[in-house]
Length: 110
View 1 (cartoon, rainbow, N blue to C red):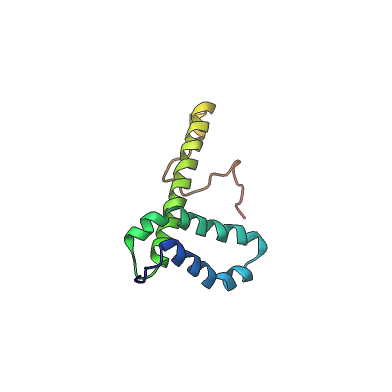
View 2: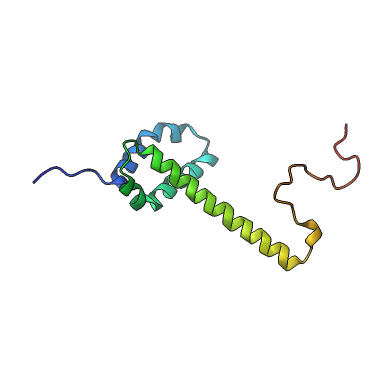
């Protein structure tokens, strides 16, 4: 029989092993976040396998970005639903707001 190419999941596990020293050096509170990033990549392993990129880190990073964007979108929808249910339209935050409004005049002015 001929040789077979490793699956993306195999490449992902090898990549994870390569990063094991980095993970070990992280603070304990950051380790679950690190693990979740690889879970995001594994969730998109089929699509990553179709890409067949020379470097597995590229599809991993895109998978992580995709999952994080999905999370952001879900949180934005949840916030919008909560604001709509609350019926407090004057508290809604403008999408382009960059200045934090102070709850009282002079707060933070030093």
